[in-house]
Length: 108
Image (cartoon, rainbow, N blue to C red; front, side):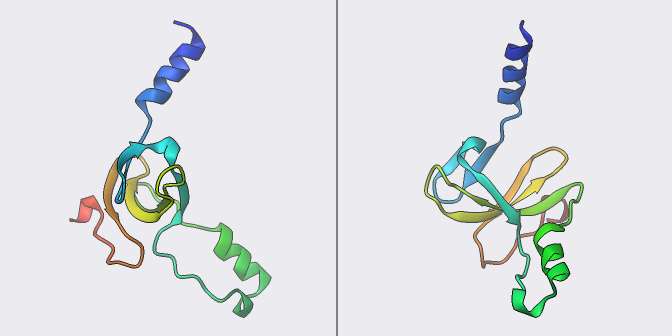
């Protein structure tokens, strides 16, 4: 088997299937990662340039479950949040923005 074919096979095996709360289960290629979910946005005019840069670019990068924002850009175009395990890429509970955040699967 050629190296290119092996790489393609690995990509297919590790493709995420993301459950859009509006459209159902879809391939990861239909989505874009938005940001860490549940982050309060400060007033940029109340921060120094250094503080604003830190807010924009410095995020937690935990091992394990992490709440994330995603947009279904190739489908309904709507935003939603989900829990994703950053080690295994397992998808946990999906929830809508501005609703109660469910516990990650390890803490259910």
